[in-house]
Length: 219
Image 1 (cartoon, rainbow, N blue to C red):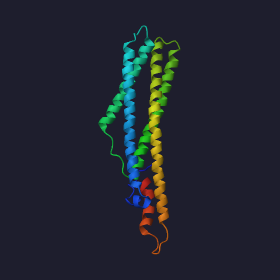
Image 2 (image 1 turned 120 degrees about the vertical axis):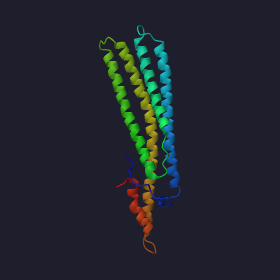
Image 3 (image 1 turned 30 degrees about the vertical axis):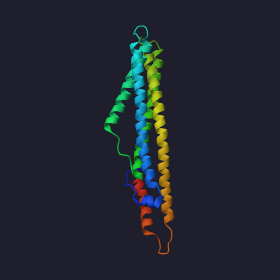
Image 4 (image 1 turned 180 degrees about the horizontal axis):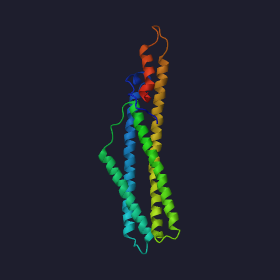
C-alpha cells in the first residue's frame, strides 16, 4: 500500500515543502471523491442499460423457441438490478469527506485502489465462470441452450465491469503517482533545509525531517 496509519503530516509541510503543497493535496482529495462518484455513475448507467435490455429480451423470448436468448436476457437483467442496488447502497451510505492532509489522501487513495483491484480480480472470475457454463452447455446438457445463454451473459458482465473498474483504477494510479511525487518533494525540501547556518542547524527543520517518515507511513 501507499500509506500507513500514522499521524497527519504537520502543518509545516506546506511552508517547508514548497508553495502550493496544501492546495495540491486538497485538489487530489477532491479528485478522488469526484472519481468515485463518476465510477458509480458509470456503473449505474451500465446497470440500467442491462436491466432494461435484459428485461426486454427476456419478455420477448419464449422458453420453448428461444431458450438461449431468454436465459441471456434474464441473467443480464439480474446483473443490472444487482449493480443498481450496489450503487444505491453506496449513495445512501454517503461519501467520506475528502482528505485534506497528505497522509489522509494517501490512505484514502490506497483503499480505493485496493477495492478496484479486488473487483478486477472478481471480474476475471466472472468471465471464467461464464466460459465454464458455455463449455458445459455444449456437452449434452438437457438445458444446454439456456445454460449457454446464462454463460454468455456472465461473460459479458465480467467484461463490461472489467472495463469500468479498469478505467477507475487507471485514474487512481495517476492520482497516487501525484501524491507520491508530493512525498518526494517534501522529503527533498526537508533534506535541503538541513544546512549549516550562521547560528548552526535549524532545529525546527531537523525535528520535522525526523518526524516526516513516521507521520506519513506510521511506525
